[in-house]
Amino acid sequence: MMSVLDRILLRLFAFIGVVFAIWLGLWLFGMQAVIDATRTVVFLGGYYDLLFIFVVFVLGLRFLLFPLTRRSIHSFVKDTEAGEVRISYVTVRELASRAARQVRGVERIHTAVDEGQNGLVVAIRVRALTGVDLTVMCSEIQETVSQAVMQATSLKVAAVHVQVADLSPELHNDKPAR
Amino acid sequence: MAINSVVKAELESGEMGTTQIANDVIAVIAGLAATEVRGVSDMSGGLAGGIAERLGRKNLSKGVKVDVSPDERQCTIDLSIIAEYGYRIPEVASDIQESVKRAIEGMTGLEVTAVNVNVLGIAFKEEHDEEPKERVR
Image (cartoon, rainbow over all chains, first blue to last red; front, side, top):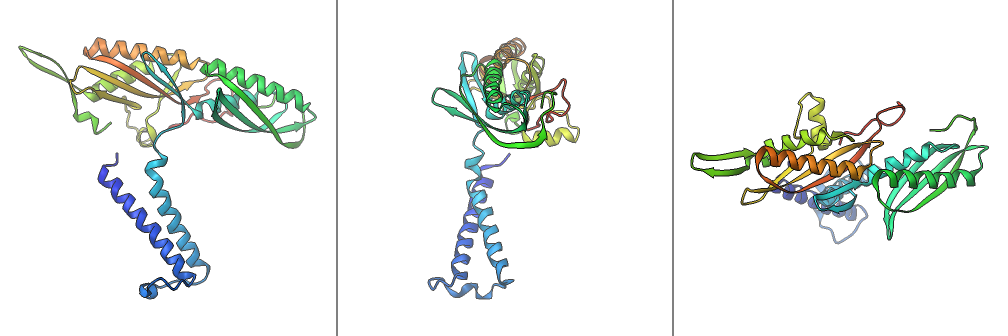
């Protein structure tokens, strides 16, 4: 557990890091406005400077935004009388992935879940096996995924977008793909 | 959780003296009640909890957060769970809410105002071994 003091210190450190990185970057690009104090700093020269500054900058930025980014896990929230039920995006995504993997002709997939206006939206990128009717496969995916998600979570599935992004060079054999 | 454990839920201040129940006790009760529900694969205790578990420290209150109201008569429970594949999550959640509420109210006498269930992941146990291992979060 982090105390409030830790958090403030981390923020401060991150802030100084970012400012420092920007300042060094300006100095490196020969801006006149920067004072001479950095002259004593030993640099490795060339691209290492840039790399160093970049790393400091990214680290600083990361920690500066740290408390914001870990605020909460994305979930679908349902209010029941006994308390809230939150189903995380990860859960829905894994359910959808699993369902999609069971459709014939699917070799590899990448799934993303988002909340739409009227229900959740699943986007699936598929690498398909050669020799499968892609339209049939896609509609089958849509059917299976929305069924599976609805069945398991009772959440409303507004849309299942399928994108066939790639074809596998391997020929389709009759075993169901996973 | 470690911070919460100092706070105590005070019960009846009878003539014989006072009874206090530590938050950790409530958390353990809630954790046990929730794990027994069908469709719950595991409790999810965050990254630190996962590491502690690896090192062999069994934590029964993993994934449970207890908030006791200032008057120490009511509490709300936040649970983080990993669901098991094949169960309907809303049903599992309402089972959890019911049994946690019953367990705490039965054993401590505190009133449970809300049991919030956080489903953080899903575990696929049977059949396929190629499935990704359940996440410890």
